[in-house]
Length: 430
Ligand code: ASP
Ligand code: MG
Image (cartoon, rainbow, N blue to C red; front, side):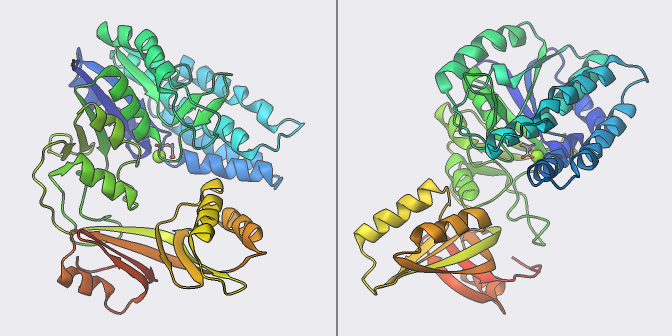
């Protein structure tokens, strides 16, 4: 049975400065008395800045404090714009920094992914403490909940998998009763915890997924992702001109789009919602009155061309050294190496003695792959490529988008065409 619960996700852009936080509070003001769970990401570019701290720490560049100061100054400015001097929030935030001090003290751990999660989770802890405090100062009764006591995961740091049963039980005991009392619950996106109590993260941009997990566990009436665009568009407005808003999408189309690299929604978001038929709205926090995109079951399946550009791709050309045919046993071995190294294949093609794949360019993983395959195969790479996917393509759109471009690999299916291309400038028309 669906409850009248709304799950709202606000991303980093919505709370990048004090004005943004005030705007979020103004949106929530309209839901006073309703049952609302608020999921918040790190403010602005904090996660990227924390990754820089992590880099400085691990590579001993001597810049840890300098990089941390960028984060501290950002949050100080944010608080200065929202609170009076001496407000208890300043001390709460100081305590959060202190909790992370151990990371930088010797002996340094060499478990990069584990330490990454312990450190990078700071972004969501800071933002949620600040926003929850501000909402309460505005008279919106909000309980700050620690996602680490709710979202239980395994220990695959940086890409952890959800333990659904434990998470459901923890939602039932820690979130449900509070929401039913009519208080807002505010929780960090992106982070969770292992059974041993170590912090984990769900993968970059994972706050959407957190909101979907909570929507699922709460049988929410709807989930809303509040964004700085008016909804899901036919292409990324930063890359393409003349994009238009899609008023509706089926779950299936949304899953396909995210699979092909559309960054508007985290790829794992749709499935939990679809399992319980919970509609997802993508809506503008700048113009909250305007209708966004509705994503749900049973929508008419007719779409305009939708364009997705995935940057920073590499073509890996893998050929057998002894000129033996690339047959099933080679494929089995190659796929296993790709899976073990978590290199995701976006497109592939095999010929008699070679196998060519388009993958995201993650240099350390590709280097490992080369080392593993060295004995049997020659592996050559071609970097700086882009993967262009057009759903519901029309020949004229395809033509106009590839004019003057070098197409290195192409695949056409009924609904989708994918092209690996070199250097694509701003496209005028789609
Ligand atoms: N703050 C995290 C990130 O930037 C999670 C999120 O934004 O969803 O990746
Ligand atoms: Mg973010």
